[in-house]
Image (spheres, rainbow, N blue to C red):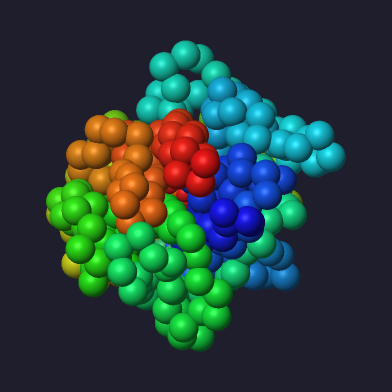
Length: 331
Ligand SMILES: Cc1cc2nc3c(=O)[nH]c(=O)nc-3n(C[C@H](O)[C@H](O)[C@H](O)COP(=O)(O)OP(=O)(O)OC[C@H]3O[C@@H](n4cnc5c(N)ncnc54)[C@H](O)[C@@H]3O)c2cc1C
């Protein structure tokens, strides 16, 4: 093969780290993402309020030191160090690392990590891949985009790093056995409330709650951001509770979450602004249990955190396995 063309659908951590590891190796890689920016669930929402721009990391709140080191290891010698973006905060969320580690956050927003990874890569944003088709088994892949169908170039290899159900939809007309495996994985949602209040809570940046509704409060105003006197919070509900409420109106869910906080003794003060985000897919109920899915005869690979877990470590491990499979297929 001269210069093989590889399409990677999804520019979250998995897709970006696959592209990074393959760049400069005579492979023509194009990433596609449906969003306006890269980074996926390492997500930051900006809200303009009282002449300030407030930031909410409404997916993952930051990285542990080990996770940050693993992402930083994807750098090229010419890249600015990832460390320039990161600062340490004084609290280790128990669900993020067994070992005591500081949480590393980004003043400009956790999505800057994705932007850092995307430096130098060819990324097509606002490009929702609706389907991928092959004329015959093993023939080149033709992508259709919701915004601009079909995409002009064909690809020798297709790598899907979207959540499993989106991946199944994209290749649904293909007879690949991977479609059934992708469809079998059940999503797990997460309700998130983004609140601006009159009061800044004292204490750690990330507060682990003990109630049945809210899992944690992330104090965004403690991440080196200028928030004036405002308290800026991302409040995340437990995933099991969220999944049960997934079809309930956001206003009702937000009220239930704030009531739970009050019952648990957290007083965020007067609410100045509130918006809800429903992660329909924050993770999977049961991960696949293998590092990636491979259909060699169709030149199709599916990867993502959902292969091994619901976290950054799983996304990186899946990406590394996918890279090894891609190299093997293109050899
Ligand atoms: C609320 C929440 C809290 C979390 N907390 C933690 C935590 O404390 N610790 C931890 O380690 N991890 C946490 N995570 C998980 C972590 O964010 C993920 O493991 C990691 O970001 C997964 O990266 P990924 O690339 O596999 O998937 P994603 O980041 O989801 O990337 C998939 C990409 O595919 C794109 N896409 C989807 N469909 C299409 C399509 N049809 N066409 C084109 N593009 C498409 C999406 O826009 C997205 O950018 C949390 C996640 C959430 C949501």
